[in-house]
Image (tube, rainbow, N blue to C red; front, side, top):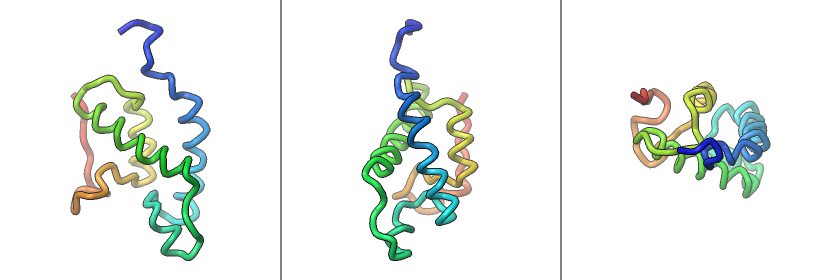
Length: 101
């Protein structure tokens, strides 16, 4: 990979969207975007929905050792907020910890 590759091209998106996700987590106690609707607060901002979807896509790449915008630090930040990388798999969400080799 060259030093001008696209690995960190989403740095502005990460730095803009992570505060939105963190604020959501602090308000609802979860990164599950359904919590907002369940609380009667409407729907989350489309940018937040897109960010969460992109995180999950990048995590799948990262966990396979493929080029990804995620780093160990970013993954840990998300884990600290109990981010659910696998929303459709029961039993793996909050306690699941994948270690990249």
